[in-house]
Image 1 (tube, helix red, strand yellow):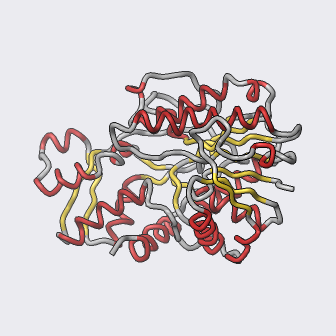
Image 2: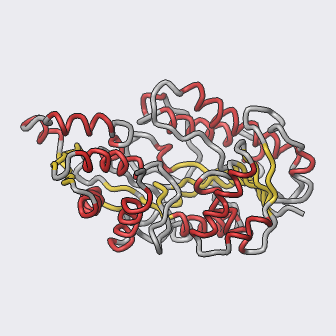
Image 3: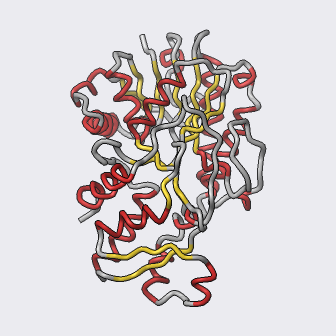
Length: 352
């Protein structure tokens, strides 16, 4: 018997989710395009991050699958042999340009394939959880509400990834599955490592930014680098352990509110993030306005660093407000937790 099916099992969130599920005694079928060896290594690492026995990975069933195929490239009657919670977390995450077709194929068409597979084969009582991002709100002004979205033009998003996640949600909202009320859309914030240790098994989001800053800081220590930021810029950093806790609680509860934001009630000001990075790397990061840079243009070094950060720095130029409620909100990232996250990654996570 399988209680939970998790696709994209080698991903950051999915591997920690699987670890938490097996620790609770649930039977889990992990689906991934990656090899079984990679999936088991990722889940084992996640178990260690969560202070759990990494040998519990042996209890996880692993099976290859493909989002590109309508039948997911696996035996659907076997996958859905029992009522289950299906976690659709598989996705392509990239902010690089000219990847629109690939993002659409994975995040939109692939999501539609999983919905069709679930709708056609899942047993009565099963639930479908679609893992999304709070940043599918794009650059639209105003508060992002916990409701099904409407289609928006690609120009209203910072990148094609955000647009693809919006399109996937729009398509899901129009399915019979959504009308039946058997769906939960969990929109995550900026995923970071463990809130107690700072340990992170990810190079995405804020870690990609830190990695670029570290590269230049180590080559030319002591430099000052300015970034154009919104005066009230803040990031909704969400530790993986507390996020998984909220995911499990929401998926096991009533699905009367199908769209939920799993973001902390208080975001981390970019100025605090910059200060934490500057404490652990030989660099001074400074948040400025566009007018400041117009008055004092970037020097060559600053211009190069900004260019290398051009895919993540747009998130510093907006103020975000997400509707959220206490049952879905992970605890805020305190200054102590922020320092743990930055110090662990600069000490352990950066490439040599």
